[in-house]
Image (tube, rainbow, N blue to C red; front, side, top):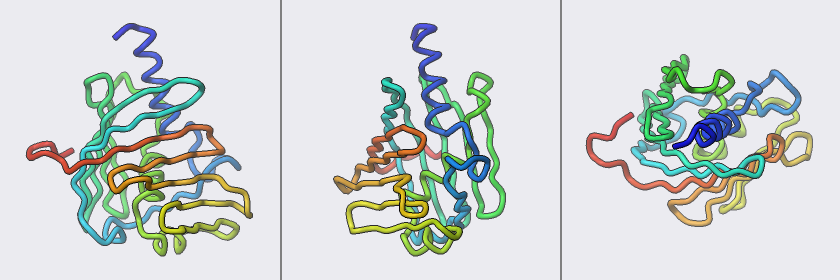
Length: 184
């Protein structure tokens, strides 16, 4: 990969994670901090993510494992592990590669994942005043005082499309069962 490609990958990861932490600006999305058990089922997935932001496209892979006690996530970009994230419902821990941009926020990655995968009732219960979440069976919408902030679509059983309208990025996530020995 060229130096330009490496820089693009770092910019893409920074955009994916969001440069603002929830609550730090008016553009943020509230931090849900949902328990792993609130998902209501175990997950063991290999995900291929395509990020569209600022006129560029970047692809990366994620290994995701959720059980009632914890969420484990490994982000792989440029053929290398960029970050490992673990959430036990109380503490968010992270290991980051030295080349991963500083602004990448593990909390933001966890939040986007919870907004996309956790049950609507759990998301709604965690939202502060002024925020609303709705789901019509194929599209989940997060709004702040009636203004749409994020839209999550499930066009197929193994595909999630996330459109973060305030931060201007879109993710297409294709999931498949993780292979044996590929735990994050």
